Image (tube, rainbow, N blue to C red; front, top):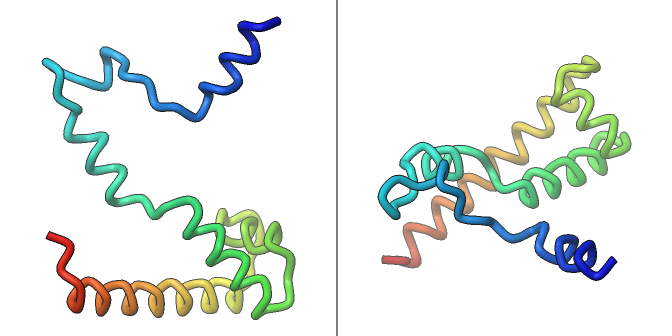
Length: 99
């Protein structure tokens, strides 16, 4: 029973598997996919904001984004929120040099 508790606590940790690295270096594909995909937390926040604007539940917004349902208004609002946040992030990156 004690081993189950340990494994449950370590679930969120990233393990260094042999398939993830080559000669001690992370593969470039893992880095590229992490950069291209938006953070799940950011996407969840955008879904919640969209749901509030269009008076739908977050689950309904998720279904529309996955293509299970059709609602052009939801897609339009989500894209506007996403574009607006991306413009703000670009402006912040120009103002604050992180390098």
